[in-house]
Amino acid sequence: MEEERSLSLLQLMVNEGLVPSPEEENRKTRVAWQRRLPKQDIAASSATLLTYGSYGLGLDIDAFCVGPYFATMVDDFFIVLYNMLKSRPEVSEIHYVKDAKVLLMRFEFDGISINLPFVQLKVLVVLENLDILNPVFLRDIDETGWKSLSRVLANTRSCRIVPDLKKFQSMLRCVKFWAKRRGVYGNLNGFLGGIHLAILAAFVCQCDPYVGLSALISHFFITFAFWPWPRPVELQDGMLHSTLNPTETRLYIPIRLPFSPYEYCHSNITKSTFYKIRTEFLRGHNLTKDLLKFDFDWHNVLEPFPYTKKYVRFLKIFLLASNQDEFGDWVGWIKSCFRCLLIKLEEVQGLCDPNPVEYIDVNIVDPHVIFYWGLQAGKTNAMDIKSVKDVFWKNISTGYQGPFGK
Image (cartoon, rainbow, N blue to C red; front, side):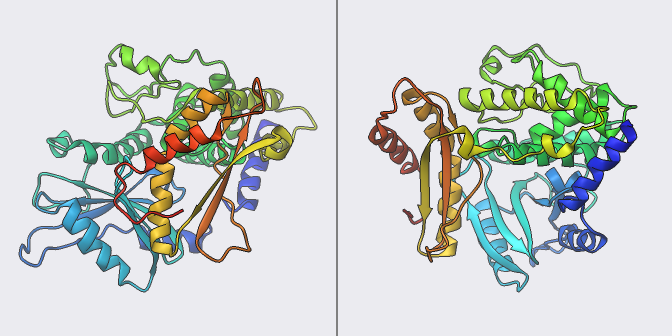
């Protein structure tokens, strides 16, 4: 019966288009192939692209540009490589995000979405088969590069230490799909990002190495529904972990990065989003604790979150720009500032549910996106929205270098 539940879950993933076809896999392999970027004046030097994040786990594509010591982010990445990519017929909707915590380019390559950050290594030649976990390559990396590098390091390490990589990949597909359906996926909105879910899934795989997929999903929910936060989640990676840093207890969901004994996943989780994440863990547990009941149905577990039934009041965030290039930069910057807006709302309103779904108005021609954040019933329905807007506008007006949208 448990095997039947696992097979039905896998079939649901296929039906939802979450398991790539052989044709899609071939396209992704072609796009993510590690390429050299030689400098004309230094024939021996090179850079390369590494895959990480979801693609490295057999899911969507995330790539990572690794350059030699003389290739700079300002000139070579954001100008030279940007122009090279922009001139390619396969590339569309390319824009760079210079003002977020992780600096990167975003674009579509042959219809596939790519996030491309950059890190500079203190070497002349970046080999195609680079072992990014080798400590020799991690010396003297600046803070910006280290933030970008943490995801590829965590992914590489996780893939090496889980007992069954294929089972881990299937589990992570399911968990990401659940998080998106239930509105708890998206680091910029204060929820769980891909690297958070990957480490949580790897932790369960290590604890239960011999059970099937359906049991892993059930164990995932019961484990984190009753986890004694802020106790950190730590993978068994052979490292001697330090005791929890007192400053890290401010994290609502501390998750240790598997390549470091003292570093944690970056998190934007707030009081509101922590409450919703725990509520959804508990809901998932209640729906999967009786997997072997005859009327069990995965569709109930993965039902989309009913925002319009749950909330009667919403905060509407409407972003617009005059063209697509400016729009991408503008939206990327606003999203990177969402956490300060969420904290201000908690201060004046109470709990808030920042729905990550992006909506559009078919009657508007200019590039735009609309967010609707659910507002919990507070002591009063009156809210000083002007003070919220003033604080948020002051925050987004500081440090942004591109043309302002609306």
